Length: 478
Image 1 (spheres, rainbow, N blue to C red):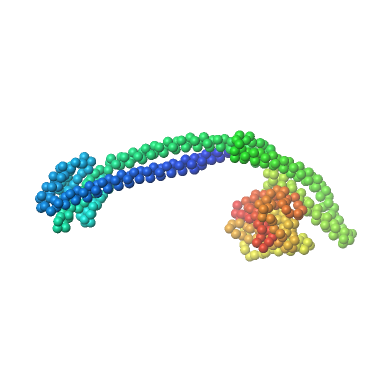
Image 2: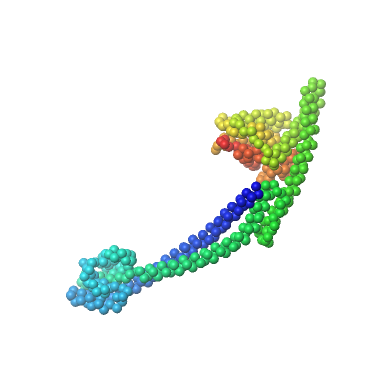
């Protein structure tokens, strides 16, 4: 058993390490990749913008230079284009093209004047818009990535007689951008490796002592009260270990007190209560008692029954503590079981001047699988609490409804209710809070355990108009 618990702790630690790395390194990697992509996008935008701006300036200045030639005849104009292309100085990294209005190549700085018309849209756009147009993308004829800038050449009569076009490959620029990205990704990888190393070292310094805390806490939860954890660091983990140590000691002391109390009380009370109950029943069966004596014997019998119920609760509690309580499950008409309990208890409350009102309805309540004896015990415990803590309201409401595949059984008193700061504590064993009512404080704890064993829930809350509302939610299907 001990090995399995340690193994469970190891699994949890492994999961914590994984979440730590995912939440730190993965997020950092994601942010780093985004930053690298932004850097690449920035350099790409800068490079492409600078290149396009340079080519536009070239096109603008060259077009202005040729403005005087446009006043010549077509033959002289074309000869000027050929001569300029042949003497173009930057032909090693950029191509200058002259294209006529029909889209045919007139001259090129690469030495080929008769060729296919460029298939990119910048040429036609320059002719149509009579302004400078650019293109960035793949050359449809060669598949090479290029940047092209076309500027219209307008004759003196206003006619567009051709296009001056600068073209260059973007391969070199793209390689520079990829180099920037590769360097950035390399730097990111180094940072991630450093983060992995430092994070792993840091989380080990947390998980090693945390593993011991988990192991010892599981032993405490399994009943090894009083066990202590060795605090290794003077930090939050050390404070946690110290708090668990104090809790372990207090639980050990409280459990010893409770076990001694329950053992002593159960053995001391069962024998005399059996005698009191038996003799009171014998006396009540006699015809020789006067009215006052009979009334007194009834009181004795009723109080003996109450004490017997307390002993039963104590014994059930010890069974729950030892995990020896079992349920005898059967399919039951839960409405009938609850109504029988209410009507039986209601006749007893009438003698005390308390009205127990059952709110009947026509809703069909399905049969459920449960232990009817244990659930009757729960209903009686809740009704008894309603009388003890809310009896001054002189009225108790009870009812049963079916909703969302759950049978909801509610009991509401009209007493002072439960202080808000005690609502979350009243189901704890031996907790009585500020209540002055008699009792051991384990009835609700036992009831809550029984309801949970049925897969249900015991809910306590203060009613809107005052008093306490207790709801037992039981699943209709198991």
